[in-house]
Length: 312
Image (tube, rainbow, N blue to C red; front, top):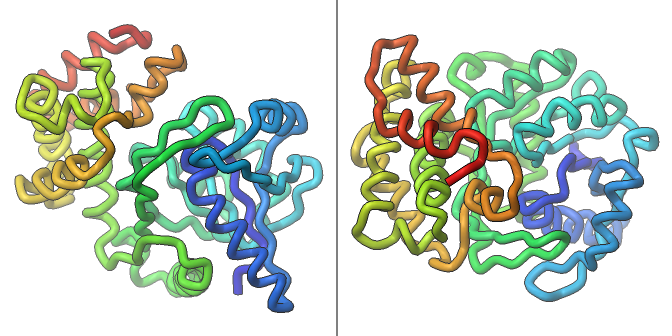
């Protein structure tokens, strides 16, 4: 049974789903349970967050926090930071991870789970993706119209691992009890790489043209760039042994077409705020895999050349 949950990262994704997990923990405690949920953050980061008047869709929120020094082993630790902050998040989470702890990463890209496995070999790392949200964060204030969903499961190489299967079953029970939107998928490999393909398209196209979702939801150069970047990501995924095709591209683009046209994906938000771009997760990974497999990826190369260094 999962009772104690810690989330590392109180940005857009952390706040978005943290409101659900904290509410569920309160319900379970009111019913006599011992459930707990808290964000892990240094005192300095907590004070900065609180000073911004945290709110979701205009309503004030009051999240629980623990510092890295206060953290004790938890049943579940969720990582919801940017890729550039993962190393620090791993250091901060040391006290929260013990043998048997389940780890879940909501980071973009296709490498964070491997970093967690190397850092915490005693834990059980599940594979997950978060998609369909159109959240925009300004400081400690979050707004959204689509909550989105989380999908989770095991990689193909883990399907016969009894310990991973047991961890997955425990997580599935918690996921259902907390009423988190989403589902367990039998083929997480395809979902995982499909989400990567989507990010190579929508994140990079919106940053390239410095526009919101609306710029890729209508015919034009931004939508063409999005699809072309996704086609190249699809090609490298296929070379890595994951079967994706045009129907997968269409399915993911259809999801983007449902989002608030005024909202923006994370890379465009980072661009506007002057934060470092997660370019290495998307075009950088496509270029690396393309070189390994001898695939030409001119669109992702053009995106990388233009956005490298955060400029547009």
